Amino acid sequence: MNIKSQKDFFSGLMFMCVGVAFAWGASSYNIGNGARMGPGYFPLVLGILLSVLGVVITFKALVVETVDGDKVGSIAWKPLIFIIAANLVFGACIGGLPSIGMRPLGLMVGIFALTFIASNAGDEFNFKEVTILAFLLAVLSYAAFILLLKLQFPVWPAFLTA
Image 1 (cartoon, helix red, strand yellow):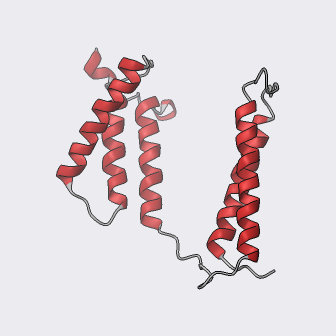
Image 2 (cartoon, rainbow, N blue to C red):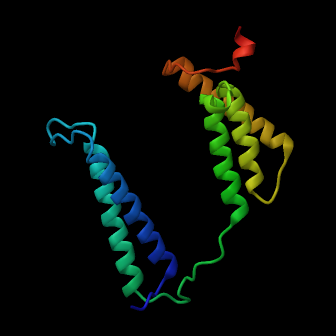
Image 3 (cartoon, rainbow, N blue to C red):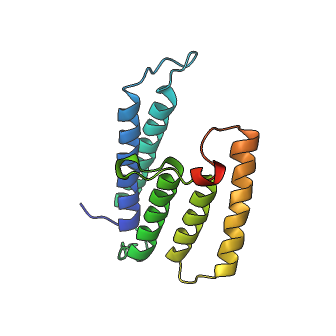
């Protein structure tokens, strides 16, 4: 087997894996049918479509010749670590960590933490721009999730609201 484009080949494999995981996860829910869709219908269809897309991309990577072969480069560890850490910290801020006794810090603290941690993934860090972005995201998130959608989760740390 001669891989013509490594990037396409591994992207196709990733799409197939995610698609199979979605479809497999959806199988534990009621699927229903086209007229009366159950909660597992959409993830099942999405998983199937992702898998088909992955098969097409993988097949193309094996058949279509590219100019330079599109080799897979080295893994960019710094952005990967900062983006994953930002999402984990955001989740901990919203829901807390009961196992270690950390109470929820709220949406606002979570958004500021997410923005500041994720902005370290790039090559440049401008404190003023990141602060403006975090403030803007916090205001828009409050308007969208709390005012418009009326979602019920902590907005501020508990010690500020008591």
